Image 1 (cartoon, rainbow, N blue to C red):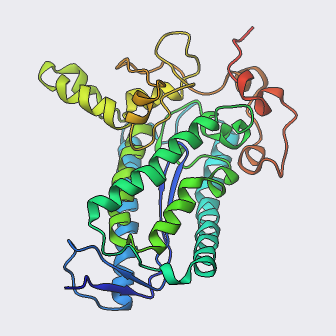
Image 2: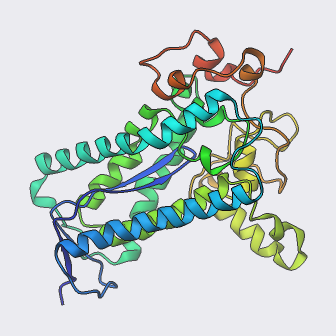
Length: 329
């Protein structure tokens, strides 16, 4: 029996942080995976795809944001005026950037391989997930790792300039960091090939992990506190990104043995760090976050961080990644 189809599906956007974002590109007729037995209703099914993903984004992001509001952490006291401008600009302009990437990916697929649309739609969902983990999450690990070199640092600096951890930081990156991210383009191709609903649920899980890894809620702390839960903690902290491991990546310094900004690059899966020798697991949280050159010279302009190289900085520390954590004199 052929799986049901989605006719006229359009772009669906979900995101990841730390330097992560996902664009669901569903053009033309997209077959649903075999495990999905809902009947097809043409345009209504297209709306279902968008609605499910949008609802998930609102619930996950909004849930963590509400929790941060309740504990007084959504508007951190150490957020500067430039932080607030940058966070606002990212919130407003990020969907525009993702929309352009979506349109470009769809256009390329239609022009370069018109006969391949939905060619892999009949694959089992677990095969699609494995492909997504490699094409999206694995490539994002290397993209993130590359962004901590002097060549790429200006496109990623904004993500680390916040002296606080919050859901506000999840999307906080240079616009070109996302526009050029290989995993986004690969995901666009896979969606054109028919990954549809599998991609929606994959992106929802990834979104939950990444937002949870940036939020000051620190959901992993009970796993370290209670002896009976420590075996679960041991597995989780080596499999997915957690607050403890990702907070270390945002630390102001790594001289204390807790911070690790030149490692812990994983987004959904932390196992990439374990496999490639960039993991540091301490089960502790850094006492401070941000960049030392901002402490010395004040915050960088929001538009320079978000739109470099259109707006360029004169700071050596902003342009040269290996200087960004020089000890304070």
